[in-house]
Image 1: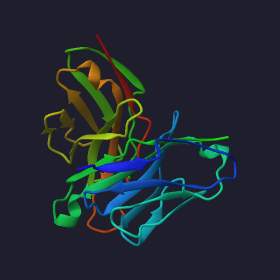
Image 2: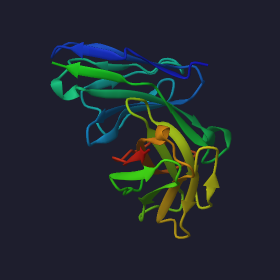
Image 3: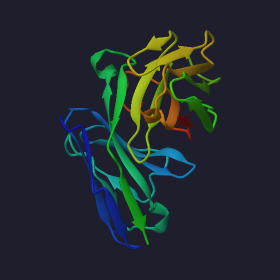
Image 4: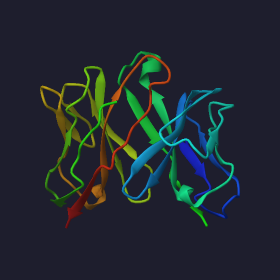
Length: 119
Length: 114
């Protein structure tokens, strides 16, 4: 059981380049999300998905696109990277007990992070 | 979701109990209290959650005041590996899709001192 797998772990981009951060989970979780973490800011939600084919914006969605064609994968795309997107990115999936009538039984599993630098 | 307030940093001696406070004075009746921690450079890790009763698991205990406006995470015998940033989160748990976001604040940086 691999849990949540993020790739790559490190990436350097030039301003204007595009790239996709990959996130995959093998736990059959419906809910997946992307966060970015910056010094002194905590974790901020970028986009999230409550199931295949369903996505929605979080707190800081500008400059990022997502899609959820399968339950397992939730890629995050930067179409035109900017220095302000330099950050550490975390993908998470949640075992949502609600979906099974276990209210409150929620645990989020996080990937190990992607450290992105845009120069 | 209700906001939370935590001290930015705390120290605790190794082997002692670490008590991490969290204020959530605007918590609603249908919001749970969750605790996560993040060890340096790793993804956040779930610790424990509760609604109104005190909870205990293999990692920690969670004490929620009767009015639910504050809570305390207790690590009973802190070790050096417990050095991390600890996040207190309150969130609504809903049967409806789309209400499953986790909102993290800046947390408490706990340092365990040998």
